[in-house]
Amino acid sequence: MTTDSTDTDTDMGVGTSRTGEARRDRIPGYESGPLAHRSELLDEPLFWLGHLTPCVLVNEEAQELLWGADLDAAEAFHRELTGQARWPVFTVPVRGGRLHVVYRNLTDDRGIDHLLHPGAADRAELLASDDGHFMGPALSWSELTAAADNRLPGGSTTDADARLLLLLPAFGDADVPDDAADRVAAALDALTAVEDPQRLATLITEHQGPCGAPQWTTGPDGVRRNDGPYSYRNPANRFALPPDRLALVSAALAP
Image (cartoon, rainbow, N blue to C red; front, side):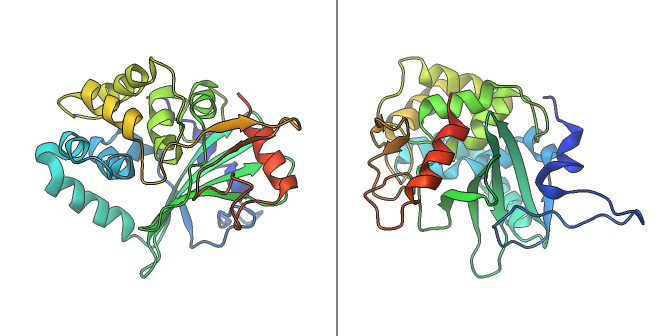
C-alpha cells in the first residue's frame, strides 16, 4: 500500500509554527479532540475487522465471515484504538475537496464520523456517522469508486483498495453494478484475512448497512440526492443539509 507523507503535514490545516512547534490538527467546522493521522493502520488486518463492522450488522452470515476466528483479537484492537486521547483520522482527497473519516473517541459518545470538506466551503459537512445511532449513507456507488480510484495525492493513501474499504461504511445505493461484489472482494482479499472474501463482498453489497440502500437521483439542478430516511443528502429529511450545501457536496463528489 502507498501512503502519502503529506497527510501528516498539510491536511486539515496541519503545520508547524515558526518556533517548530506542531500546530493542532483541525477540520473546519468540526468540534473534535486532538487528531492523529494513522495511515499505518490501513496495513493492519485487525483494523479492517472493526472498521467494516457497520457493513455487516444487518446480516448474521456476513458477521461470521468478517470476524471469523479473530473476533476476540479484533475487539481488543478496536477497544485500544477507540480509547486513545488522540482521535485517529484518515483523509481521501476528491475532485472538489476532502473526505475525512474520524474516530470520535469521546468517553461517553464514541463513534465514527464521515465528513466532506468541499474546497469552496468554509466548513466540513457531516455526511454519515456510526455511533449506535446510524446516519447516512453519504456516498453512492459511483461516488465511492470515484474517490477510491482518483489517486489524488495529499491523503492517507493512494491505494484504491484501502480507500474503498475506508469509505465503504458510508456507502449505500440500491443500484450497484453487477461487478460491485467483485470489486469489494478484491479489496477484502488484498487487505484482510477473511476466508471467503467473495461471499462476504456479495452479502455486503446486497444487504448493505443499517442505513439501507436508497435510490439516488440527479435533479434538474445537477445535484445528487437520495431518498434514505437517515441521510443528510435526502432533502425530504428535516435534518438534511440546506440546498446550497447539498449542491456543494454533490459537486465535490462528482465522479
